[in-house]
Amino acid sequence: MSMAASSSNVKVEGLVSKFDLKPHPEGGYYTETFRGEASVQASYGTRSSGTAIYFLITPGSVSRLHRISADEVWHFYLGGPMTVLELDPADGTLRKTVLGQDVMAGELVQYTVEAGTWFGSYPNPGSAFSFVGCTVCPGFDFQDFELASRQALSDQFPQHAEDIAMLTEGLP
Image (spheres, rainbow, N blue to C red):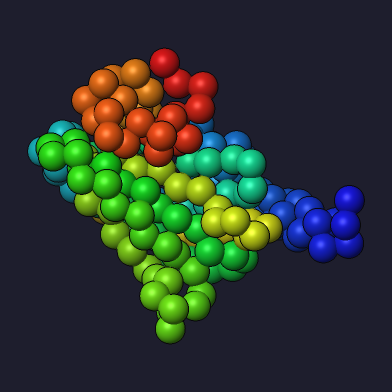
């Protein structure tokens, strides 16, 4: 193991420990940092007014394709750049957005994924980790969370089969 890899591991382990991050069902690690006490009525039920999490993704792991019922705002904090991949369920448009600190090169420090969009993420090559925050309004609830089916999305959007395969590891 190189010295750089060793210090990256310490940093990742330090983040996991400091923020009490746990494995997320979609991949990566997370912890909820905020859940609004107020309730709001959404078309799909009563939800918290808003939620926020810390989310950590490391090389060799991905946030598998999933969708939720609300908009999700991503905030880039630390580490190397990462890509958020979105697949529009209506027309199959594929979008890749790079989050990171190099705003002059076009990386974004904040980005919103619209409700109902299939999306996942991965650290870019050379990134030891990507540490971000995600804010959902109305608030996130696991009953609104749907992991993608590799087969169903590949059948529906064969032109994106390679990207779908990369972000549906272990899914039917």
